[in-house]
Length: 428
Image 1 (cartoon, helix red, strand yellow):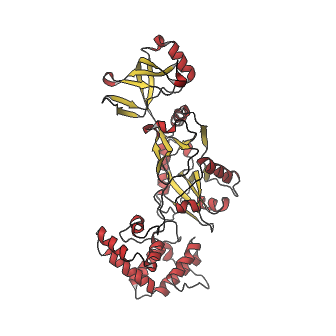
Image 2: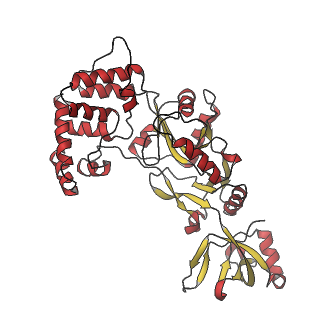
Image 3: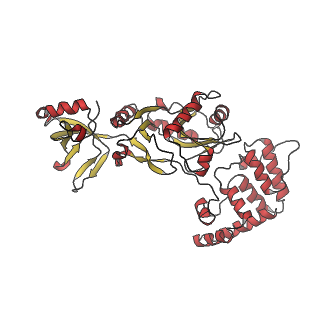
């Protein structure tokens, strides 16, 4: 009880002003206080869930021989292991609330309820806490993709894997050392009510792993991308732990729980993919609501990017993702993973040609097409070697022809004229 009163006093002090400097000053005063640091970790650690919300705490449960936690810290040691929200765990919390706070101290009672339900707000976040108390609160970061068409040269000469870009909701699924499963959004907010996926994760996969994937409507590939997103959104937005059925978790990456907690990874995409395929190939139970997102292509042929982009978008999909096969999982936005979305198209006139260099010497390097206000745009991607030779040998025939050009967006060239970003000759 004394430790809880100490933490309550700390919370009152840090909340007494909205000034960032004040909050920083309070944190600095308590930076060596082991009790405060333990409470801050209980309140803000995104990986520690206790499986109990306010609705469960208010329920009437009847359990014989309920254990009584002698201290607040003993209660949370128990809840870190027993975090599935069973009636017996609710009873343990209810008894601790009565024993450790008492009816006369309503503020302490509410504070302990907030800690159990992970609902404490003191006007600072994990980043501010860690700035004063380094590495106290584990960080929560996912790998985010850059836009391929902004720097397509990042892919040149590298081996990559192509997968479908899903228009859903990013979901991190964690199965800890004790077999407990928890779900989080891309920013670390808990996602509750995924009863079907939760059951399959517990039954089919080993402990100590973290899946990264996308939560979608189960019949995702039967719908247009936008329709699928809307359908999934209606279910996901159901409040609290209301059962959210009819969803499928499509997994595209995996880490060990230790890698996730330390936010460091040395395993390449190929190594992680092999691990994933093993998990799904030898799952210990049926998994109709957890699927492995298939790799569509693996290699170094960059023409496959637009080929698969065209195929996926023509079927109503949003685009494709590119993973560099020799890269580790990075907990930030990076060029090791790139997203490729649907391109625009234009019909433009060919007004010239450029010879290629290196491997393409003696054949077509690029066609020149006329765009707005007479601006000339060079198009050098999307041609097969056969078509390059054909155009180069019969340039007179192709000069003046109207061809369809795909592009990402309109931009400005180095001379200030209007141009196109990543124009390509569509693969036929």
